[in-house]
Length: 428
Image (cartoon, rainbow, N blue to C red; front, side, top):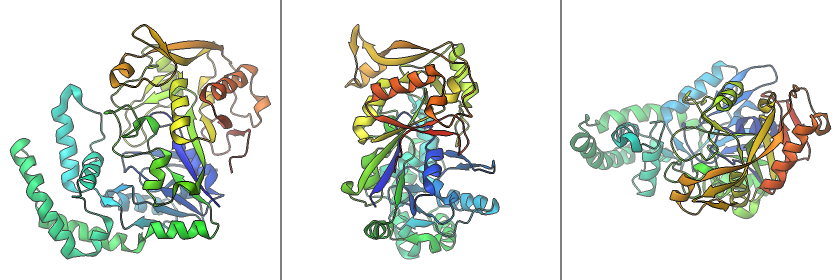
């Protein structure tokens, strides 16, 4: 069975957790392949229990599934242990979790530098969560990272940390006037985490490839989204990893030809957390409507999300970059009660109409949305389970999104619950 990737197509918060949870029953493995505890998914189970998942794969909520944290993830071990303890207290079995030995660790100096650098940037700040994600990825690329496997060798851990903190402490003390970090104290702290995490550590690259060779079902779950990809997003207002489908290969060790289905999660409107360009952002009563009705607050940070109308330019771009085969449109129900619903079909940049993502950062910042307007609907659609049960205007809206984005809309979400979906085409 080929692997299946689930990716966000906008700036995150599209509802990937719900989709991963929905597909999880068909899977043997669910793999988180990038990001860290700066991301979050909200999942509502059939009994009404709401879970906020941050670091572990959403598949951990599905009995019988093997949840995997891949090598592309950066792991805060203290946070991971806390999340596992919370899930266990909530009755979730976490014993099947597998943690890649090659995943990089978030260390105290990463968190310290993340917070102080962001503060010093002032008005030019990126809008990070301050959890050390970016600095951890920077050290990984600079070959100064500490990996999960280093927890299994106290001598290696101590040597690496001593070397790294010689430089990092100089920066903290002399540049930012902060206290130096004691390497021995950090070693002792992290060896304590090692005792808890050791049963979960595995060669996940081998595990997943053997599973695929045996015909097992593997779902690859991304955090954040296409427009936050460090290579393909609205740089520099991006995350530090690759949430796109290509990142799923790098973050798991699964070859590209093994991924034959790429499911793009796309919200029926658009939201963004943090700084950066957002052509369709609303600053009026409609923005407040989407914020309040959609409950648009970050799962991990609680930050208010910026809200705007659907952007088909982003949709087309994401379909291409990810090789999306199916779209899952979420939160269509939020648009009920509007007299008309705009769709951004292109941009105006310096007086010229463009229909594709602008090439430069400057043009993206200057882009003004070009809208077409669709009739709205006032019915409650949360009970709909077939496409033809939707109001005609809602059907027309979905069909237009499908046409503009260039990929079929296979599922439409009409509410937050696991069962509140309309399945138009099977995705598996």
